[in-house]
Structure formats: C-alpha cells, structure tokens
Image (cartoon, rainbow, N blue to C red):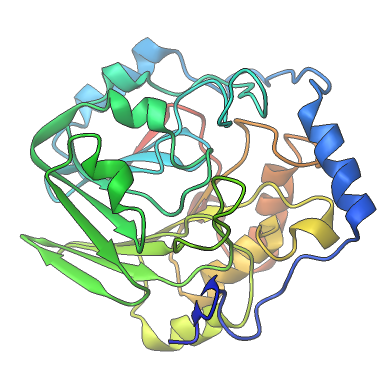
Length: 319
C-alpha cells in the first residue's frame, strides 16, 4: 500500500505536509518548553469527580460516551467498556516534569475506571499513549487491545494477553462488535530515531445498534471524502478540534475546528463530539478558542446545536 513507504509509514496521497523553516520550529519548541501563561478554567469545564461517577453508575447499562479529557473517552458500547487513547497523567513527556503539563484534571483517575474490555490506541505520541496510565489500567478478564501496526509491544509488555495490530482498512470482528482501522493524516515519533516507524490510525466501531467513529489525531485531506464514499454513515464521530497553531507548522498533523466539521460532513457523521482540546496546551492557539470556532463552523455547515457536542470533562452522554 502507498502508506507503506520505503523508510517507514506515510500519509495518504495528497495529504498536507508541515511547513515552516528551521527557525520557526525552533521558536515553537522554545515557547512550548516554557511554563507559559497559566490557564484559567471556565466554570463547569470539569465536572466534580463524584458527579462523573454517579452519572456513569446511573447509565451503566446504556450505550454511552464519557469524555475524560483530550482524546480519552470511556465508551459503553454493546455491553463493553472501551477506552480510547488513555492519557490520564500530569505530563505528556518522556521525562516528567519536562514537557507539556495538563491544565485540567482528567474526568476520572485511572484507578477509578471500570474494568476495561477493549483498549484502542491511535498512535504512539505521549498525549495519546501514556505508559503510566497503561501500567495501572484496570482490565476485565479477557481484555484486549487494538492498535495500529507496530504498537503491540507497549500492550503485551503491560499484561494484555490479546493484542491485535491492524493496518488501515483492516477489520476485526469480535462477538457483537466490529472494529476497523481507518487512515489518518498524522505521524508517529516517540524517540529520537523512530519517526514514522509505527502506524497511526482512526477507528470505526460498529454494533448492531450503532456506528461510532474515533478520529485519533489527524489533519484534513482528500482521504476523507474518499472514505466517505466507501463507508456507511456514522451515528457519532469523536473529532479533534485543537492543537492547530501556528497553522503552517500544524497543517500536516492537526485539524482546525473547521476541518473537524468538514470531516463530519465527508464521513456523514450524524453527530460530532469535540476532543483534543481543553486539557493540555500543545500549541499556540488560546486554549478555549477551539470550541467557539467548532460551534460556529458546525452551525454554518448545517449541524443542529444538539448535534455538535462540546462536552465537559467527566460528562457522560447516552447514545
């Protein structure tokens, strides 16, 4: 396949690439390594832990989605607890306390999670694949992980007996649940010399009752209208709206809020839930700019107000 390049994996044809010169990137990294300005959380941005726990308990038998912050969702789907991209630590960095630090707490601590039946990892960046979280993740008997190519070792070394690596468009049929890995426009890198040596992906989840799309981390490109022509519509899409500035540097790896809405239109997502914002400051845009732009873009694209979700951290919504 095209994305299996000679020196590692690569994005689909026609995807945007990062711009900016060496000085632009150096300036960006210097800004991001500093402490930066403190972030004032709007009232209600994070629900009290007790309220989060009570709502989960109240809806324990219903299909639901709970946003734990950033790209981490706890899904109850077809009787399974599914966790996406669990980053629940303080720092997204190989050497805490250096690197980005979260300014909003997670909706639940890792030890307060229900036993997880299925773990989904979209790629290997520290704000999505958090080893400190995986080390203590509560798992149900027979728990399994589904990851893109090259990431199985992170899970097998932490006690997952069953790990499936999927390439783009490969599909795994479980009992009552189908999972398909989908293309995304991003990159992988965890050390100094491993850029694009493992794959990145989004996922489609399907039960007899509904279809959910989890975008992972992605920019926007022509692959999305192409996928929309191949795939059936989705009931809900979990789409990234943050980490997009400065635009020349981020255009090859992160969507804008307007891009996220366009992904929704391309893939025929009936409802959108915004993610990848409001948790940790990775880039230069104001931390609470993304949801305002997302709401405006969704309304302009024809989404009703109740079909473009801006959730509070810890909030549960029944599907």
